[in-house]
Image 1 (tube, rainbow, N blue to C red):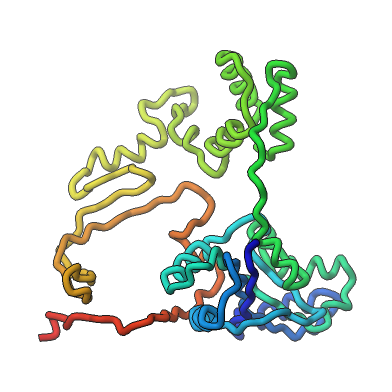
Image 2: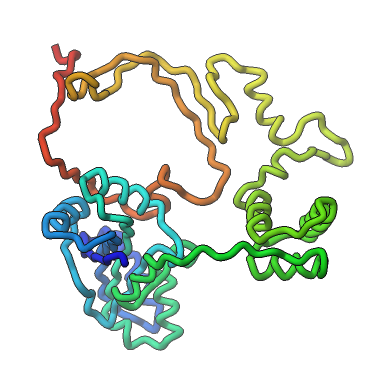
Amino acid sequence: MSEFTCLLGEPALSDFRKRKIVKRLAGISGLCATLKANFVYLVESAASLDEQEITRLQDLLHGELTRELHSEDLHLVVPRLGTQSPWSSKATDIARRCGLDSVQRIERGTAYFVRGSHFLAPDQRIRLRSMLHDRMTQSVLASLADAHELFIHNEPARLGCISVSERGSDALRAANRDLGLALSEDEIAYLLEAYAAMGRNPTDAELMMFAQANSEHCRHKIFNAQWIIDGDRKAQSLFSMIRNTHAKSPDGVLSAYHDNSAVLAGPLGERFFVDAECGAYIWKTEKLPFQIKVETHNHPTAISPFPGQLPVPEAKFVMNQPLAVAPDPRSG
């Protein structure tokens, strides 16, 4: 059974953003809102954190330990239940590198306190909450206790089998609806033919992967399809037309079109590295190539820990011993 710890952090909004939200809230039944917003850090750990670990967390996150957020006017915005935010993967990794080995996951939410909002009618509260969060990536909770749902660990579901051999396209349409696959009729017809040729039924996992590979999430199938304009079949697909730039001008390209990225030759330069012998940071001269990354997938990862308009908190590093740094040879 994992443990749950909460820290109330620093103000989450600048004065400008706060005024902007308050102005929008005024359109809800003339609500003259007094708004306060603070970051809330929700920590899941394998065991109860001791006093030293709590102190380290407070230093790292700029927050204070809290047991409850007492307010009828609380609207706690957290990452959408059932998901893990890209901010979380980065923060959890940093916490472990700071010696907090029992920390399993850290999530950040925002506690909005809108004075008088508990008097609003249910439909007005829904309007208010829609102004405070993105329903695609976030959920709004009424209390800190509800935030435990972020860390629910469900047992893996059993692999399901779709009875195409018995029910045909009806089975695929039902799975399309129940699993939210957004398959087109052309794709359903393709799957019927493909699994008939294989002589077996598809699993729900296979259909999910097929849907992801051919959805708005990842359009590789269309991206490399034949390109026909006014009945004239072109020699190149859309993707090969883009690759043609590299074919015409390959100079300085070290790598291209591998996992949606390219590496270009760069100049010689100096980088800061830890010396393996003395453990101190030193300057090292080496080639500095450039990476150009194009992400065709529409979800963020740890590479993008601060997506959207969320403000980035000031970094603060907690270290147990002084950092050994070698003199900069360029300083003379």
